[in-house]
Image (tube, rainbow, N blue to C red; front, side, top):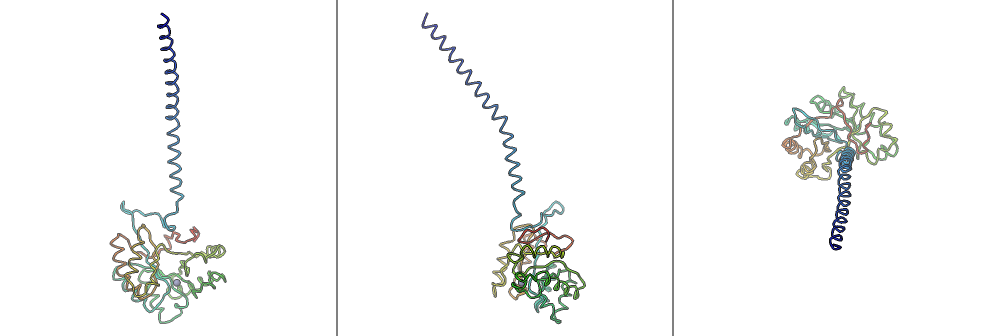
Length: 273
Ligand SMILES: [Zn+2]
């Protein structure tokens, strides 16, 4: 009799313990079910926010434009330090492949009267002519703060030759570190736009090595919008045709800068420029 009563008491106690465990387990899982989705949403939101905060790779490349449901791939071939005697040859290659370019001319070269007709031809053939300062001298531009004055003067020279009134400039040596805040403020106030680049072809140091230039450009061409830095040098001219052909094979349109569709491409990520 006693044994049986003990057994019953033990069974009752076990039931109570199981019951308590069941209740706690229930609360645990209910709690998990209640809080988890909220946590999940918060996590997704945080990830989305982080993704939007991420700088577009390299620079402020513009968002991909869609055309007929397809994302457009656009490459801007840019040529610094002209006009030079090679300019008509650059124009010839561009024309042959129905490609447009963006040229940044130096005032000192614009002053050479025999080159003016080629500058005019550049614009007439649908390319863009912007300024690359008067002197190309780092100290004058960025230490003596003559950046805006020099750009205004060079832009005016282009206007006088071409009848266009361009607003885009390419800072010699790139905008960092030279184009400090005061100069950026002055540039923005003057309504001048500044383009750095997304791909440096390194053409100036690849003299006699056009294949190296082609490789350097193609290695970098992986975004839907690329701004490619080249110069009016012989090795760059030799590299131009294969660059155009290979960019087209990769699906890029080769267009000139368009002031009406400006988007910022500067190392400072200054949206005003
Ligand atoms: Zn330059």
